[in-house]
Length: 423
Image (cartoon, rainbow, N blue to C red):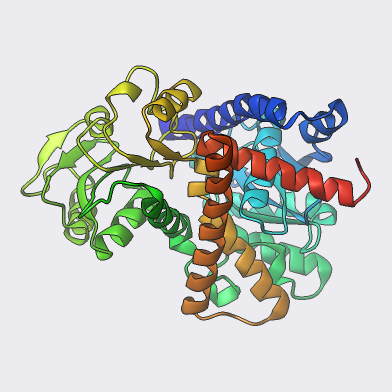
């Protein structure tokens, strides 16, 4: 399990580093002034707290927590809380900035934040985890609030942790404040569709992209790398829509059937065996082979840096939907653009999660809970509008979708800063 923890850490850093490198090109294209660059390059607030927690052994142990509120020009900051033994403030700053970019891209009124606690959740009990969470909330409660900073689940936190945050914050305030946190169970103010929102948002964007390409695809072949929460949900949604899932993989390897894989039966097989391998009527392939397999649509939904300079030239897909964080390196992105392959960048493709978090926040503030149909309708509108804004810039300026998305987001943040008189 320690290896999985390390993967999350390094994938997150890769995401930030690649985004920051691409932003340098965006700044040059937009001809930003030194004042604009300084405003974008520095977080508005950073907090570090130290707090004691009584452990099951009877000893008292000190923990360190952080919270970064990067930019709030467009609204209260929004971002996940992660628990990780290698958590560091610089990495959180980058992730908080990335959240500000993502919220601006999909045009929801949030800034970006990120935070967490330095802790290995695999080495503590459930009771210790709860006490650590509640102690952290007591330390940062003054900087949190539905109109200040709204946390959400992230690496090694889930809806159970969000409930502890909610409950502790409400104890401190002495009243119900459901909008303080998103990612809650529906019974405590969570939103419909949240559990599939990242995958579904990506599917909405993909279907918009298919309408923009000149060559019509009949029964397109889809290859998905990753069968975790996002990859599995994307596969299920596309399968139910009639797409042909011809290859799919998990950490143990991949399977392929050019005629299509029954995803519902594969989910049962995975539940029983713990792997996609061995599924009837399929050929086993590696994760590397899946990426360069003969398909129309490729969906990396696992780790970062999976498509690089060594395999990009062998990609056969016409569209790449990045549901994972930073699965394509900058070198590969440029090569794929030269090959005429549309890469829908991660900051757009996997933004459905934060969009539905925004919907949850609205519902909590108004105490007006939406039916599933309304959430689906508004999610589709938000994601397709963000795609159209990005694609229009891409077409006008003859640039990649990634660069267009970053340009749109940066312009939105700077426009808000100008309106406030900060520039």
